[in-house]
Image (cartoon, rainbow, N blue to C red):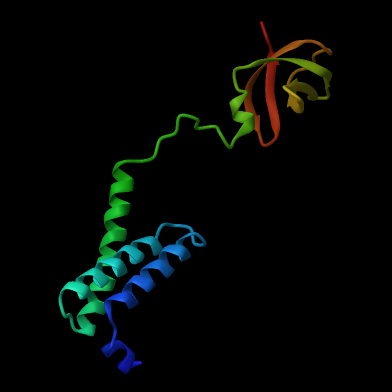
Length: 148
């Protein structure tokens, strides 16, 4: 192992960078990508200057950790915002909408049609065809009240 480390060249770092970047696609958390960037930078440095292998390893680790901490600090200061915050919460998308019951609400539950889908609803007793307003969501059940 020591012999390999003593003969490490710039292209070894670039191969490591490519492997780490590919590994990022299978790992959540944006960690491997920063070590991939670190490996690419160390490879570029080794291409330009002769750097001892011990310093290469230290630079790789230090740059990778610094990049992770810098990214996390940036992400905390600039949280990602979405134009569609309820994109993966289908029920929450319907809050505030008025719908028509396709099955009466009896014993607290009934059904409404939303597009080509039928949703279970919870609310006060109402007859079929009554208009209801969605006020909330409980799992896959829409919470409704009589629309005025």
